[in-house]
Image (cartoon, rainbow, N blue to C red; front, top):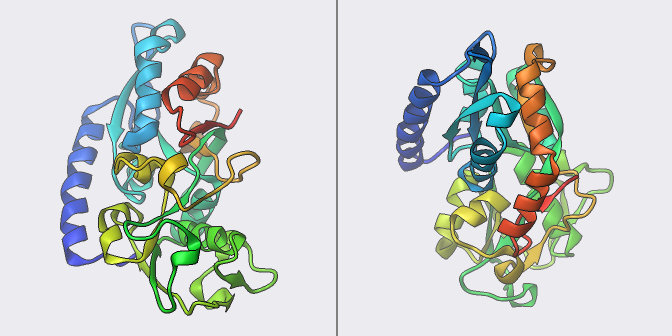
Length: 281
């Protein structure tokens, strides 16, 4: 289980309870989406940016013609949306990558189904004090995510840019600081909750930030990231996830089709013009 500072626990508890309350008042539940008057109601949890924005576009422009209505609940945390989905407070969520879902399944035993990827948010290294990797000094402190999937992804980003070297044969999803083989600048790595990293950049020489949290913090990945993941061919595309028992539910399948529609692809390309969100289809 991830350990948070006390202040973070208090913050997330308030946000999480509010989100869960909203979701509980929405459509769906343990038995999946509900249908009323020929319209299927789906309760979906999502990260505020860009996931909830994409879902809101679908609700505003595409859902009615598809016979759907969406109740969208934003979450600023990576743990609660899966808990809410497992508990039946949501019908689906839209915020996670395949490697994160895999780590959550192994850790918590969720029985979920992930659809094909919708978009990619490149992870990047950001700083308030330096502009290039050459400016990193001996012993500098780097913030990385404390959840296993994003920790490994962040370490792999640093390894791909020759900041560190990971031991041979280590998969990015499994990488930990113990797998660092070479660390020429003797950097130290502090693991904190992913959402907190952009808010605490001033406390570190640099921090590895997930794309959605960079957007929420007002960072511009294509301009402000010291290094940035490549988007093309990335294994970290974000996808719609539901309970395994609901993977053939007509409403959820239709929502996934809308997420992969030409209209949504155009919305992503014209809304996120700085390269911070890239269609994966």
